[in-house]
Image (cartoon, rainbow, N blue to C red):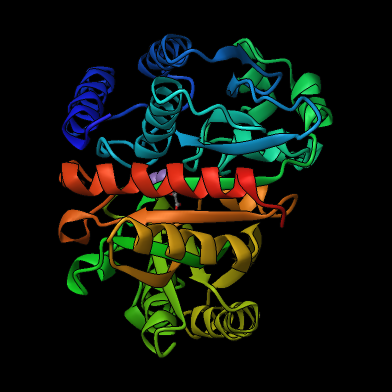
Length: 413
Ligand code: GLV
Ligand code: MN
Ligand code: MN
């Protein structure tokens, strides 16, 4: 396949997949939306057209297999996700699934039969869902989805398990989907960088060194409802003011981290009786990310105390619940070297970088040698409609993914 042919096919596939969206600005394919469900049928057909044997596993992952020559060799895995954030772009995750399908097409056209089965997975619901859980499908795929995960509530009080059931998935089957998992030879995921490093350093390829850990915070502030016109300022116990001071404390934790971590408050929900009542109760949602487990646990300890103390200065009680979404995870160094080697053999420049975004790879890495290939993001933008990657960079990413898989196929660890 010439790079022009690959570029054209990738562009056509990207455009076709982008037609499936819930509406509004950018592209929205949220977990369990009709647009997402329909788009995955298109993904399934694309895998079939590429010559793969395809089925949905018990956790709603689409699993395509290009059979290898040696039935005992096990699997070489690749893939990613095709759901998006609300109002997202057309490249996050999608590139890893469509790129993998393109690799399968090229291998078949070139008559290059691998010894290992090539297994391509479109993992269900990688983005954080209404229940605050990322990577639903890949967790289940490796057997790490827990009954507790399925008990998580959304804002309406529905559990994730109930939500799955009403969308055609059997929660008990999801919990046991990992039984099908046989330790593969390796998992390699192609993804857009979603940040500015590769573009700034004019590097073609990112060799991912590790994936950040994520600690999510749910803080509830309880003050006292009072008349907004008659209560003197010094007597108030304003839950919203306490939450506002916490937003700044969250930000400062990231700013003070010497680039070891980033921190974000994404939501404050107030329970107020109206503009003439001092807010009594407020809920805040935040997260911290770092490649360093030490920084994460230190920052969690300090920030917890700081938020409790700040709230107390406003006469407000703060209750904090931290949930580890995923721990930081280093990528396999032997596969990193192969990715770098494949890039050099193709005449491409590369850069070793950590990933500030989380990925399905973080869960696969708990079970088998895992690594990621990044391609540059235009302007470093992602999770927004402007998300984009130049077609030449997509083709480079597919080439590096293919050659890394071929290299893994022909050598032992
Ligand atoms: C997924 O894109 C994440 O990093 O949260
Ligand atoms: Mn992604
Ligand atoms: Mn994403």
